[in-house]
Image (cartoon, rainbow, N blue to C red; front, side):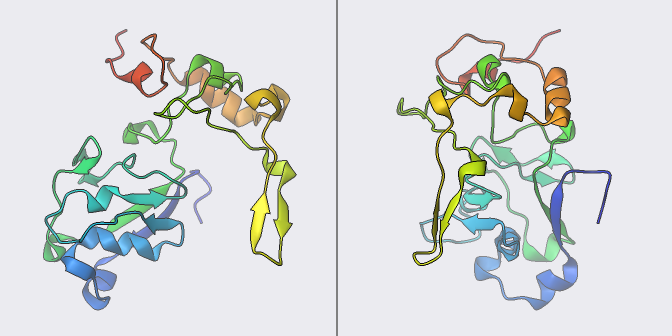
Length: 194
């Protein structure tokens, strides 16, 4: 256990790559050994299809929003992987989730000014539907049906009294959107100039 990081990580080492069977000789398929990783790729898989490595959810629905790095350099172009190394060329790779380190840049979430204060009342999907934010403290487990339900935050606004003090501090160091647009993703497209 590492106490100096908030990152959860599983390292796929050389021995695992050699000993475990892998479909289509794509080393990234071993990421599925992490219980928090789910494959969301529905087409036929082969080592040269560049969509499959980015179509995994890591600790939630992060499909096409993950970063793939090769020796620290990004190898993903938009939602597509630009290069999948051959199995024999890979020594190890980590599957990381919940990372807040600045070195990884691209992330699955973009924070608008309203979201920084807990207001998600204008946070919409690509199709213009409100993204409902649920209160985790209202979770009700239905054991008989193996389901759980939660209540949304009233008005889709999280009270700042519910914010973790460390998260509040981290938000102070993150730059804000640099474009005025309808969706939060487009708010960060232009380069940040100082």
